[in-house]
Image (cartoon, rainbow, N blue to C red; front, side):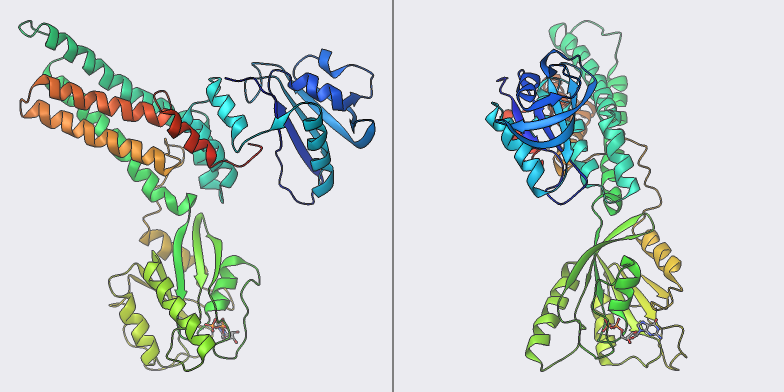
Length: 455
Ligand code: GDP
């Protein structure tokens, strides 16, 4: 790998107490020494690794800030290279000025994810673990963070390596068989091979299923809150988000557009859109909102259809209920703190579940959480088990699974052993692509291009 020295701001570009400028590469410490002078008079370039120095940052004689510089010497750093991390004051100006000083001292701008890419290329972490770094940064809740941290610690990679290892052992036996077809292969019988394929397929299926069900925690589920005007959609949204995000008024039709927000409902994450009320309207602006609401409802994975329990259902309510048929939907019977209208019909037959709440007082929120959790089968998700972190990883597993099943079928039906070998080898390749042990440069580049600069 080219040993350029790269630099980037690793903290958000916003006002904050502290900011970090990271410099990595063979000459990182010498580069930092040109712009950072420790107060104790030591030369940074002579300092040992794992040391922190307090001092000043300067650029061509101009003092920029007081800062702390951490020194890591290769290979004992995140990237595996010499690294200096300057922790200066945060904010828009200072961090940029420190970065510019680093460039003036010879560093070049780091590309998106280049620090982690270097960690990968230097063998500090594999590709699956690299992706977990990004998942950890973007985790919206505890479950997602735990799952990402466990993957970063190698829990997924270990499981994948185990599966690949078992299939590779079968491949070795198959090779012996192909080479000496008339000999008895004593160490692995076809039945045993089949057993290995079946067990590996089961492990990989479980990993895929866990990723799919875990999305509720990691990415959140696309949720639409729908209902005619004034039933309490905005109030429900505010209850869920815990802040005054939507405009709540008692004039019908005031939530005219779609407001999107991720909210946490217990451990679950709902990507909620609070939509304009669905009803027939002549108001032009409002009708644009209504159209969007209908579109939103069509593409949502989960519908929270809100109804006002203090009023009889009208034709708008019924048409919303009709639209819920066959969809993952919860009827949220709101305003239970008010006297109930006499003729609320049985709406359970239209939706997947019915929950009664008062969005205003918060009563019934726990029941809503339970209904959503039950509906999304979220109970079974355990982030302590090996978890995939990206669609790319899922795709590798899907391909590996298909190849393992093909290999097993070929073995069962007595197709030539060559065919079994080809399928099993493809399965191993897909698994090694997941961990990056056998991934094309284009795949690696694509993974890191999705990172942020400074990571
Ligand atoms: P939206 O048009 O569906 O978004 O309805 P809003 O959230 O704007 O609520 C309409 C009116 O109903 C407001 O005056 C709210 O304060 C009131 N409201 C909402 N939820 C409740 C509830 O649970 N109980 C009572 N009593 N009033 C509520």
